[in-house]
Length: 176
Image 1: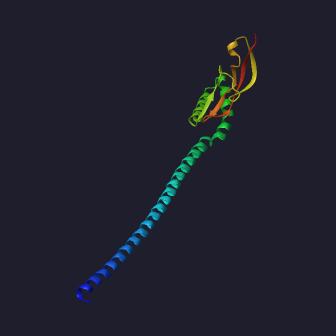
Image 2: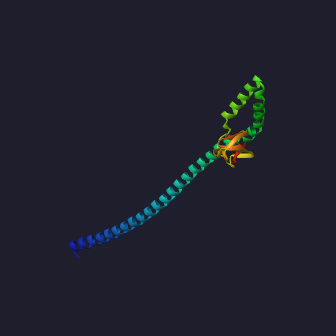
Image 3: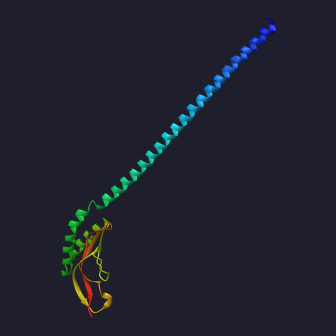
């Protein structure tokens, strides 16, 4: 074998080795691309799960805050319910001219109103059994007063939009 043939043979071996190395590199790149794709899919899955968990947590916090606010609205409902008869008693004593009691009545009413209590005296309104308690009827000759509240015996009280005591009323009953 002459020198040229040896160089060609060496070049062929180098080519064979470089082809093999290139094929091996392509195979490695292909495997790495597959692993990268799998890792990206797994990362996306983890990100999606984390984002769902974050959204669930935010929603849970919102619901918890709503429940807390609702609880605080009615935490004093029992106390207010117990004070309403005191308010009624003070109101009954007002026509008898006791000025000191009038001041106490107004103070108590002011404190209760600042805590969400509303009073309602529904004279002239249509009777609604969900809001009013009928304790009697008053015969009337006016057709427009039929089923209307003509007399309020006891006011209703509403705390934060919830009726804690319905009004006791007498309603009109039309008679020809």
